[in-house]
Image (cartoon, rainbow, N blue to C red; front, side, top):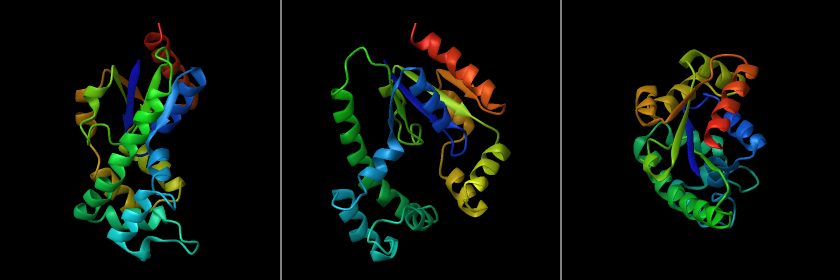
Amino acid sequence: MYIGLSGGIGSGKSTVAKILSELGAVVIDADAIAKEVLETGQVGYENVIHNFGDSVLDPTGNIDRKKLAELVFQDETKLAKLESIVHPAVVSRVTQIRESLPDSAIVVYDTPLLIEKGLQDQFDTVLIVLADLESRRERLLSRGLLLKDIDARIANQATDEQRKAVADVLIVNDGTMQELKENVTNVWQQLSA
């Protein structure tokens, strides 16, 4: 079974992915792969330097993802350019991982851009995590993000209405961690039955 997992930034999608992994799912993290394809020596790294210059590098010569994010989330053209570099490399890597897994595996593809990239039809089930906007902002502020950057990222993502429209399963993450674990466990039991 191939499950698409998504939700807006700060919704708790990564926490849901972690719980699903603990329950037995094989989780493929699109963000982790996106970081991997931008590491020194990868083609994504070279393309980012070519298109955005040395200003996005940290003192050790690695891509400073925070600087890069600040640059692209303020400019739709730059964001589209970055996505055209990263997305094909991520798709290729995900395909490699999936092909290496047994057919019996329940695979969860954890991606923030499932709807934005029109990926929903690739999955047997689409699982969407929702949380109210204020909770999302608070979580992201506690991670050290600036409110203007949070709002820019949210503005570049699908709306909750768009997410609901493609969801097979909704998990609302406005309660306690225990409530979230119970909800995810119930969903897992249904999906793995």
